[in-house]
Image 1 (tube, rainbow, N blue to C red):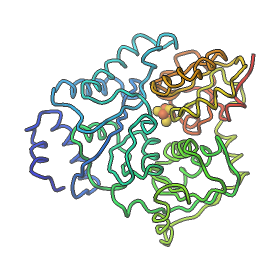
Image 2 (image 1 turned 90 degrees about the vertical axis):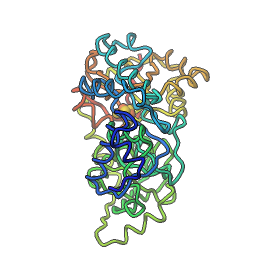
Image 3 (image 1 turned 120 degrees about the vertical axis):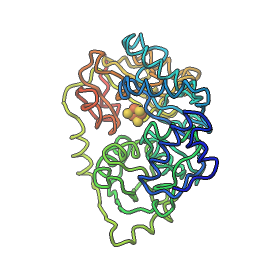
Image 4 (image 1 turned 135 degrees about the horizontal axis):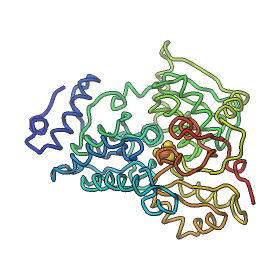
Length: 398
Ligand code: F3S
């Protein structure tokens, strides 16, 4: 891969150890994917935060990087969810042992100037790349949103790759940074009126067929931004989709359609019966959930409003977590949503989620979710039963 003179200096360690290590990661990625050069990026989203997922090896790697005073991000970089709510972890029942290690991870990121936003929806809190801009994002659901809904250009980075890119302000030019890689190769016709959790179900179905391809959807109705968030998260977790297009909705659909003229492109259609069948299969038990967890990906303010509206005047038998970022919670506190949710017995939980927290240590047996991504991951990552449905059907009133 071609390196400019300054990039060579960075690679040789003339700008410090952390920059050298970061350049080594970027050059290794560039060589694997046959990139010709590095390109400048405008932002990063860094995953690899929860102590549950990165363990002691990840903690040591980050503390080692952060020791170098020159290990500072060069572009705005936001952070993925951690393993606990950084403020009410004790009240939620997380252990001191786990939390101490989690806080060391957050501290290492803070030292490197990564904004410790701890959310998988950075695009809801100001990390909003403009159309056509190159970024290096990890967190597969955020990658799908950035590429597809915002029209920014990013590969599915891993945590170390995104951190390295943030420190160097660069990423290798390959994959979804190239226009020709962004064309659709799978046509998906959805032959049913759909709403709410259905979008996650469709993402779950199509992700398995598309794998790392680029689906092009034709829907009967127009999805909202929240619905696209659910669709992308499910596509990226049942498959490895990083970019999709929706006819008449997402910014690149007209150009992306050209890819479907290639004889290798495929076509599938999805009807109501298929959606209902897969919806049922996403649940692993018929029991009522003892905990309902909403906000995968992290809830937007209007999703919190919608939850609040459904809870008004109710008292829930199940526990309820609404997972979101600290910024959304601040707004929900001011507007009064938090108060209504708490009166019904729920909690707004920040910085973490039902998958990356050690939720399995809190004594719950069955988690109710309205996210196909969460339903897909909870059995394997948490070892708990899962019920997938719309929120209104998960609630049990006292
Ligand atoms: Fe976000 Fe956790 Fe879901 S990181 S996308 S809420 S699994």
